[in-house]
Length: 261
Image (tube, rainbow, N blue to C red; front, top):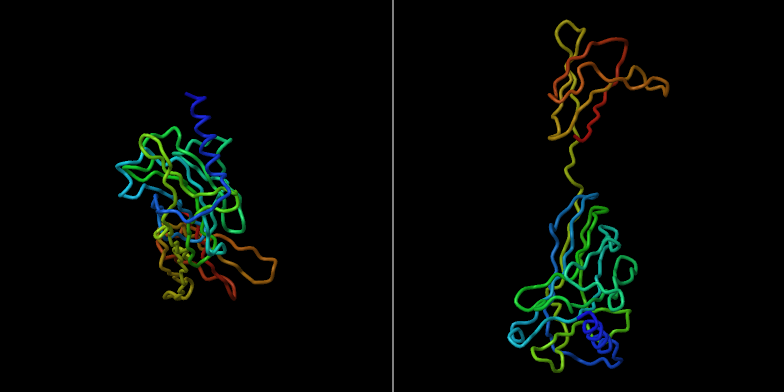
């Protein structure tokens, strides 16, 4: 069986390496999705690429035999694909007839593999081709686009094997092979301190609106001179948003530090 698989792989690779490019029918529909389409800067999600034989060919198709694709990222300043952590969870991952591709800028080109060991791959249900972690870098929007592969000198993006043998069907449809990602600033919380002197004049009340899920620490400083250090006010953490302090000295400065959690 291993020898047969190797020989079959060699046949497939020979077809892929054919030098003649020509117009092909669309035997496979490619779809793309993100686990979530909105993440904060510093957050992450996962890009997933799927393929399925088009309806008109499913009844006569054995499986998708091979695939060859590029992944394009239209705004690498907003988000990046961690291509080094790419997975091809359903493919054969045979190093002799597959590749994780090459990074060019924000894009990954020339990713290819086979489904010799997955009967029915992509016939009755979509098969997952790639799984790529994505990180948010800065506020903005990007689109991940999948297209026919380039750079590896292979002749076709998909080979689809018919039941019982014969000439393979070829070609992919990329009409919906994209996914948009919005990178946001995240949950910004910037409390404003309000200070009111209490009756008697020896104390003041400092109030603020706490940030959900954060730890709040009020700090004080006697002078902004580069020598004095910020000191934590007694009673920390101050998550209630209501702190009474003693008034000492001619002046006192306060700041609020928030941490997660």
